[in-house]
Length: 256
Image (cartoon, rainbow, N blue to C red):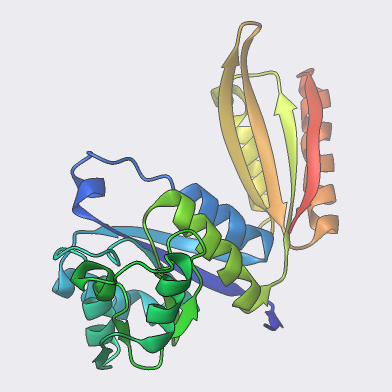
């Protein structure tokens, strides 16, 4: 694992159940936070159905745009789990049936259990793939080229992601600061627009909230340079004091 100035990633969420609304995705936030903490910017999230052409096409498009493509879903034991076939197609690799490393991992997880066709289906890997361990059910994810393939089941995905982040090239960490402004978002919109124009190297976001005491806006500053955040936050405080708007510092942190 090495550190670079800027490292980007895309996430491909695979599954008809997500698109139909039957299942609510629980993985995006965990993956985004895990990447952010090691300085990798999650730049795009795409959702596709369980189809070889759809998955393969999305992977080939995304892997040319970003340093990493992470996928979730479609590596289970049933007929509609076609992610491995799609990844192999996208990378022009053959599929290895009954990968001995995957078979051994599942046998260790379920000693004495007969590995029938369903379980063995989860031991199919594109040639050249590196395993991502799955201590919960044995069936591994894998990494190949700049593609990371993980399970869609949230608990299993998290154990895989915790292993994956130790193996990725990292980027410069992003720092952030949040200021609570006691004004509705519309009242400070122009101030924030002027602030963003004056501080182009700081990403400034506004997030309205409502409490029993009234409406307000959280203003979040994000940058790899803490000094630039300090300058932008100082400018906002000055503008708010001039207008008589109350504010409070909420947090300042190095994300990662």
